[in-house]
Each structure stands twice: as C-alpha cells, then as structure tokens.
Amino acid sequence: MQSYCQRGHSLPKKVDAAERRRAIAEAVFRVIETTGSEAVSLRDVAAEAGVSMGMVQHYFGTKDEMLMFALDHMGERVGRRLQARLAALPDPTPKQVTRAMLTEMLPSTKESRQEAAVSIAFFNRAVATPAYAAALRDGYQRLLNLLAAQLPRDRQHEADTLFFLTQGLLGPVLLGHFTAEQATALLDAQLDRAFA
Amino acid sequence: MQSYCQRGHSLPKKVDAAERRRAIAEAVFRVIETTGSEAVSLRDVAAEAGVSMGMVQHYFGTKDEMLMFALDHMGERVGRRLQARLAALPDPTPKQVTRAMLTEMLPSTKESRQEAAVSIAFFNRAVATPAYAAALRDGYQRLLNLLAAQLPRDRQHEADTLFFLTQGLLGPVLLGHFTAEQATALLDAQLDRAFA
DNA sequence: CGCTTTGCAATACACTTGACATGCTAAACA
DNA sequence: TGTTTAGCATGTCAAGTGTATTGCAAAGCG
Image 1 (cartoon, each protein chain N blue to C red):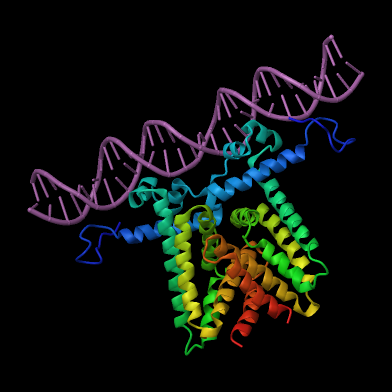
Image 2: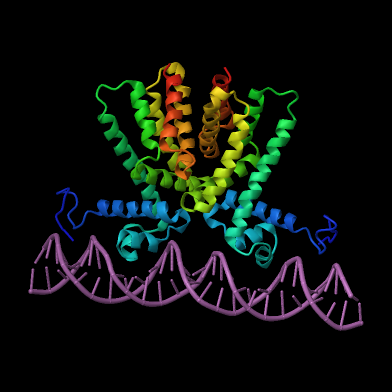
C-alpha cells in the first residue's frame, strides 16, 4: 500500500520488491511447517501470505523460482539470527561460539522449529533434484567453515562431527523423540570432547 | 501368473498378496529415489512396478495406506539386511556389532542409498503428519535399543550420539558432500571414543 | 495533461491427481 | 457343471495443479 521508495537512485518505481519476495518466502515457510512440503501450491502460499495468486506469479515467474528464493532467504534468515546470537556473547571463547551456533540450529523456539522443518523439506527435494543439492551443499560448506575456524588445525574433523550430529538431532527433536534440552545435553558432551 | 499356494491351510485363494504388496512397495522406493518423493503418484508407482493402476488400488485402498505399508516394508528390509550383516560377523565384539549397524545405514551400496532416500522422504512427511511421526519414532526406538544393548549402562547416551550422528551423515553422503568412506571415518573416530 | 510502464487481480487452460465404479476373466467350490 | 468370488483392467470424475493471458488502476514522466 505504501509507496515510499527506498534505495533512492536505483529503484525509480514504486514498491520494495525484495520485501514482497521475502514476505512470500515466509508464507512458504509457514505452509511447509503446518501443511507439509508436499502441499506447497502457489494458491496455498498466496492465501497464507494474504495476497492474490497473481501477485505471487508477478514476483516469481515459476514455482521453482519461488522455492529457490525461499531456500536462499532461509539461509539468510538463519545467518542473521546466528550473527545476532554471536554478537550477544561478550568476549566469547571458541567453544562458546561453537555451542551458540549449534544450539541455535536446534528446534527450540518457534523460529528455529520452522527453519528445521523447512530445512528438511528442501533437503528432501535435494535428493532427486540436483539444483537444490548444490544449493544445500553451499549452505553446509559455509556453516562448516565457520565451525572449523573455531577449532585447531589438527581437529578439523570435530567440526564435521559436531555439525552433522546437530543435523541428525533435528529430526528427533522435531518429531518429539527428544526435547531440545536432551539434544543440547548430547551436544554439550560432544563439545567437551572436541574442545578437551 | 503362477498359482501355487504357499501357507497351505490359511490362504485358500490364489496369489501371494503379501508378495504383491512388497513388489509395489519396492516400486515406491524406486520412484522416490529417482523422481523424488513429491512425484509419487499411484500411476507412476504402477508404471514403475509394471502393473496397472487398478492393481495397486486393489491391494491398497488408499494412497496413504500404500505409503504406510512401504514405510513398514522398508523397516523390515533394513532389519533383514542388518541381521544378515551381523550374522556374518564371527564372534563379534560389541564395538564391531555397533559399527556394523551404523555403517550399514550409510548410503554406500545401491540398496542403502535407496533406503536413505526413502527414509528422508518419509521423514519429511512425518514433520507435518503425526501418523508418520509415530511410525518413525518406533523405528528409531527399535534401533536405539539394539545399539544401547551394546554399551555399558553408564554410557547409554553414546548410543544416541552415534545413531543420530549417523542419521546426520545420511544427508551429506547422499548429496555427495562426503563419500561413504569419509563418513565412516568420522563414525570410527566416534566409535573409538564411545568404546574407549 | 496524455502516455507509457509497472503492479497486480482475475480468469482461462491444459493437465494431473486420487478415488470410485464397472466389467471381465478365471480359479475355487458346490 | 454351475455358481461364486477373488483378481484385476479400464474408464470416469471432481478437485487441484502450474502456467499463460488478459485487463486495469495508478504512478512516473514528457
């Protein structure tokens, strides 16, 4: 509805297209979380976002384009949350940084639960769709690099172990087999060993 | 085509219905692996199985019933493979048993690759569909019990860590981020610690 | 003020989906 | 041998899908 134009010189027209796309992506997340990823249709997403289906199509030429953007947006959203969490640590040790990163991924809050569900959905898609596999591999690599930077050279494999243990814990926590606290306890035991 | 009737006294009719259902379930697996789980339609499954869609519907009243049976069948298939692998170990130590179980789950052979893909697909479904979540929790619990039996009472949590690390490694191996050997190396390091 | 372009809504379209109904074939049994 | 019934193939159907098309209001600009 508003028409103020940020990014003054480079966007001469009307609305903030990037913000619209992000809003739609968030609607995608909610649909995935509640209805399941197999039911993500353009109509459902539009309804969830409170907009018309034509608008979704205006911003995303195809459904796949929408999903790809959603995947990207999730990466950025997680990254932003993670950065904020790290910034909240005063004078942090490598172990504290690592712990913050890993526990931030566990489904504890409403947001992280959503992200875990979405992550699994895209992961499932990646199994048979190489384009998504490539995108996910990139995301993995970025996080792994951050983790590895917290560990000494001779213990780089601990970063892999910690990260993929966390990934493996997403499932049981989401399904209610573990609480987030139980999963955190497992992670802490592993952290003690990695940073012994 | 054949009509010999096994299970003599209790199945007086004609074909081996259980075998038919298993064959269809295997077709479900192949479709999931190659086309992706979102594309599992009754027609595709029937075509993959080389039968008519009517036959699939004859054995499974609904699509969900078919998928549930497929999930169950996968559990049995994995269990049978695992049992065979364990039986091949002469005079095994607990550590060897544990290692055999975990590495059997990693996507190395054609079969285990398929099982991993199918496992992820059902896992994704379970996020928004409680019935599948319950079924998966049962499967988890069964495997966890087997693993826990290999470890002393004061190290039960090692079973959880090992198992969910393995689950977390399914992804990167399937997506080609790791080879099965690299994942096995990570598992071995963890096994050494659990059984130290 | 015209005039163009952007932003979007509405609809039409070609297909696919799961479910259901019908009908035929052959085996089992009386 | 006649009847029943299991086993299956085929067809139909309503609902839902992604995409393409059309129309139109308003903002930007000359």
